[in-house]
Length: 505
Image 1 (cartoon, rainbow, N blue to C red):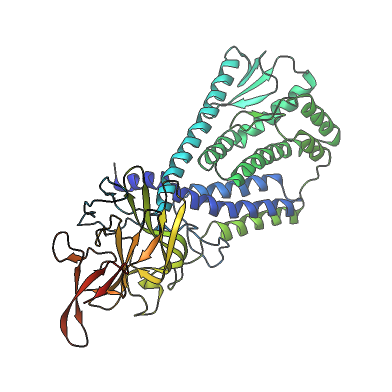
Image 2: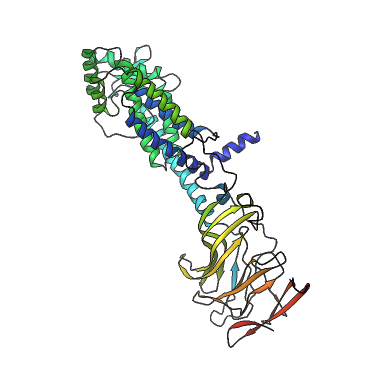
């Protein structure tokens, strides 16, 4: 299979792409709703064309940029966030086995590649979306098969006209070779108008456009505006078809046509369906009023309809141009940068999270030269959080304004040998080192900083393992280049059991 075809199908199954397309089309649907109110004197076929442009917006795998575009954004949900793959880790995290006086069982650590919670939610939403598509397809398939079973005993009337005792109202069925099905008991004076209406459907290719509309509804079933659009499309198709028939009739014949509408009205609960195209299917009251009050569209009514189609295409089939600066910038809220599961034995489990509570994402392209530390910047007010198995936040520590280049792995150990996990968190210090804080949690999930001063380590990671002096010892060493002395500086940190804090020696 050619690469571009495989890529196209991958894009189609990407729910984030579908959701962005649906949101963009939602703005277009709102515009069509407004235009329908303004174009009362334009031909009803104009309304169908407007809905057709919405379909074009949803079907095209690409769109042009234009300064005239009224779409707020091409991607409401930026791809940089949804598809960020994180960093592959060369070193697996570990936690030393210790004797815990409160929990005799050894501490264990379950760590995996850090994945943002929004990506996990997107995965569940994708399954939910596909399930919805399956339900919609099952619904229409069962409906179509039941309908085919009802008309299998239909007899030929003439040409492509068939009559059946199981048909309550005339309709068109079939896409390749459409057939018109009529009830046996139809009155003779109504038959002429009914056949003219159904044949108008076929000439207008409505037996194609309505299933296409339902297909798009099936893909975007989660969008309530799509349901409204499909219902109004069905009504506009019928009104446009009525206009095509009655524009050649005089007032008396239009009254007879209205009577035929009333006699064929389906007195059953309305349902959403892709087929059939039934003569008295939708909006009969409004259709009768329209037929009886019909006036041939004026010249300016036609011009206004054409202008509406052109304006809608220019303003909503295009996307706004991306700005050179700030094109990737977006606001972050409760964005998870790193996550690790900690089990303390006897069913006691916590989850560490490093979260940007409020901040922004931007790339080096979005700022002036020298303004971005990293190629990708996740910057804002960060927090270290501890959550219980039910995702309840037990405690959180404000880390301040941090800037990270992306997701990272938490390095967790038990340096002071008290049986509870300790974690290092660092931020940019200089081109030679990062500055770290050392945090611990207790059996109640409370967070505490256990270092009297920031730890300088000559690495560029954002969570590190600290080098301890010997097995079983609580001290550790840190080394970093001193920019002032021009030498490598090594510091020993000693655990003060009485104060519960690490101090420099």
